[in-house]
Length: 117
Image (cartoon, rainbow, N blue to C red; front, side, top):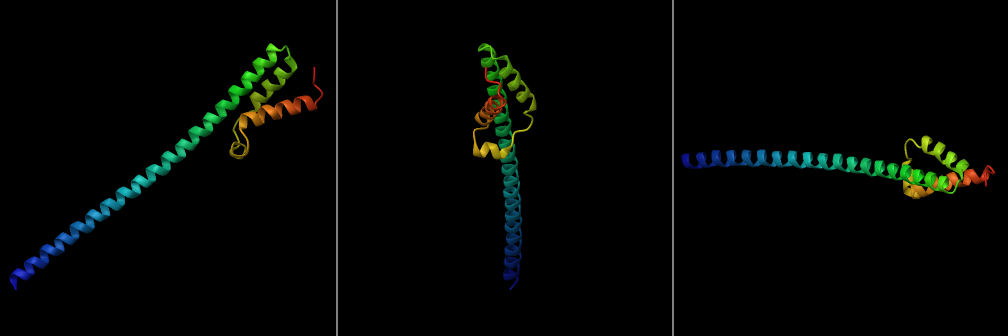
């Protein structure tokens, strides 16, 4: 009978250790999940910043091309647009290539205003 009691106590202690181990593993999984979500958000932000930088670079290239073609009015128009590009819209990234969209928008508004040389 005493042997049975000691065995029961040992089994109870073993079950406590198992529950503690499971709790620690669960907590580690939650920490890993949280870190994954944080890294995913950071990756998305870096991608958005990269797209934003690409838009600005493409506008700068278009400005240089307009100046090379001696189309200073168009270069001035694009320079104004470059100054106005602050925060890229995430919806435009999904629908269009944002840089192409902005360049096409700039060209369309420029030529619509009758600034064709």
